[in-house]
Length: 158
Image 1 (cartoon, helix red, strand yellow):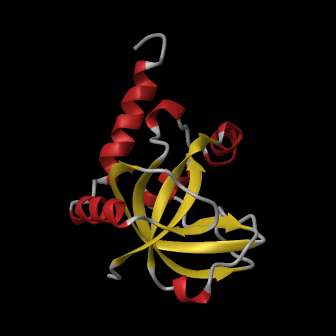
Image 2 (image 1 turned 180 degrees about the vertical axis):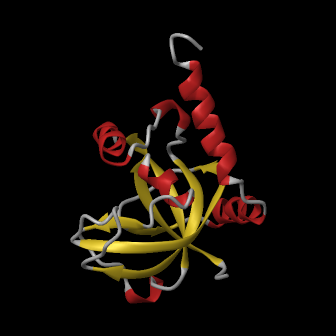
């Protein structure tokens, strides 16, 4: 497994969490990463914005229900291996024009920090906290179980 680097990508929620949970294997961008980043493990940062329209699309197109209050924002949520970039794919997540292919995703306890546009480098102090969190990644099923409990508790008969 590739060691985590200091390069980060900010992605709006719920997309950032879906990547580190290993559910979403492609992130759509209209720009290409620098070639040296491909094949490396990058940090996934959840931006402060929650994509409510995207969450509605997730529910309608994929049957995935996301509750905004359960998704950390303004924090690093994990890392993933950037395997490559494609311009077409059979993945249900591909919309183009460029699909960043992610694999070997790891969910971590959120590490609060500001993000940035495009690819950016985390500060040494934040990177140290990310490395500590990455040493003991979270079990994605715990997150999904929490999401299910919250969904059940919100039902009128629960």
